[in-house]
Image 1 (spheres, helix red, strand yellow):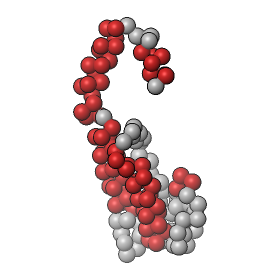
Image 2: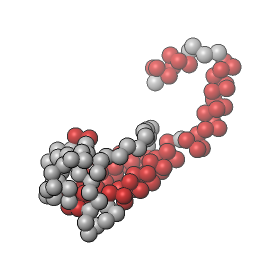
Image 3: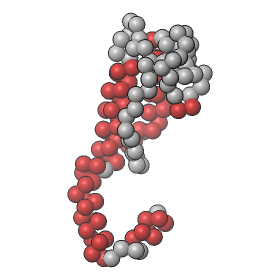
Image 4: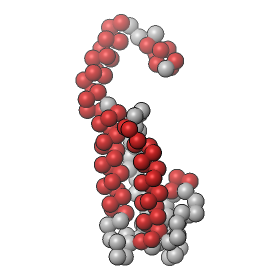
Length: 124
């Protein structure tokens, strides 16, 4: 809040009024509640892609994951050259379950700011 107050003290009343009008115009489309819904839809769409072939898996390999579960979760880095043991539908399921647990915490109540960056392929 201090940073906001500092910035606010450096703008003219006319600039502040214009910024307020712009914020009011953008809020319905880009406010936290709407951004969170878009982020949730995007998350679900990408999780569906990971689990799109339940019989054979999709070939996604996740570093630190095997068929039993997640052995290391730091950022859930993926790597395309994982061992065959790590590239199973069971490992994909383990990653999806872990992501769901974390996303439930992050999206709980749609409160706060939501930042969604560019989507990057985790690897195949």
